[in-house]
Image (tube, rainbow, N blue to C red):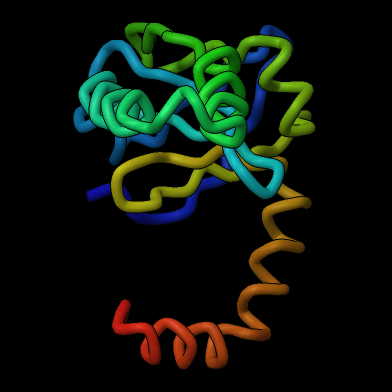
Length: 144
């Protein structure tokens, strides 16, 4: 299970270090993909295969399914983790998420998310203000 929040610097070559806690679990090759809410998703190769299989099950006859599959698969990139735990963020993904300087790397159960540190702080503050009502809504639909 991937949990926790870490702040790391994006270097001048678009590399960030994966937090030590996540390195062993993530492996030597990962998949970086466009995420939601202005972040990037990072998956292990095996988790990406699971997600790919689920996305492939969706009907290609439906426009929304085709659009979402294009968004995820075209934006994904397989990336190597170097010997000191760094990954290279492709330019198009770095720009998409607005990554410069400090980044927040957060564990979200089966994936990591990479955020611009300022965007993450703002998002987190917004969610914290409504955490009680979110929990109540999720409890009402049987999630919690």
